[in-house]
Image 1 (cartoon, helix red, strand yellow):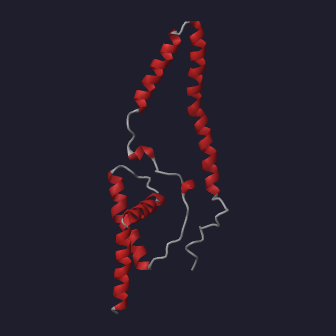
Image 2 (cartoon, one colour; image 1 turned 180 degrees about the vertical axis):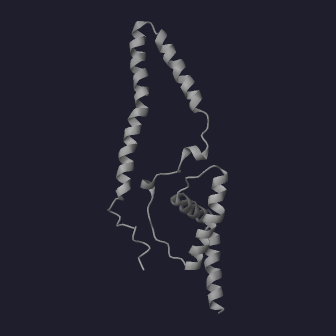
Image 3 (cartoon, one colour; image 1 turned 90 degrees about the vertical axis):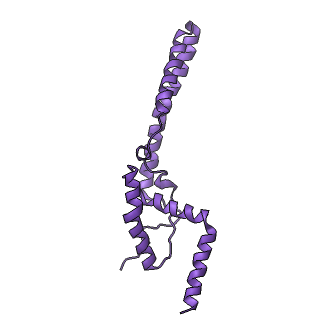
Length: 155
C-alpha cells in the first residue's frame, strides 16, 4: 500500500508545476500594462500638439472601462486562487469520515457547483471552503470532538 501523503514535499521544495504558473503569469501582466503605458505617452505628445487626441484617448479608456464593468460569472472567473497559494497539510481522519466526505463532494458539492456553471472546480477550493467553514464555527468543531469522546467513553 502506498503512502497517501507521497505528494507532500518538504517546505523548501517547490512543486514542479508552480514554476510554470509563475513564469506564465508575468508574461500576461506586461501585456495588460502595455496599453496603460501607451496612452500616457500619447497624452504627453498630444498635450504639446493641442490636446484633441488626449480627449479621444480618455473617451476610449472610459468606453473600455464600462465594457469591463460587466461582472464575470463564477464559471468565467476560474479557480478562486492559484495552486501556488496552497500549503498542503495532512489531515488525519477515520476512513469512514473521509469516504463520507468524498461522497458528499461527488453527490452534493460538485453537482451544486455544476448548476452554477462551474465545471472546473478544484479540490483545493473545496478543501479551503471546508476549512473556512470550520474557522467560522470553531465551537461546533469542539462540540463534535466532545461528542465523539463521550460516545467512545460509553462503549
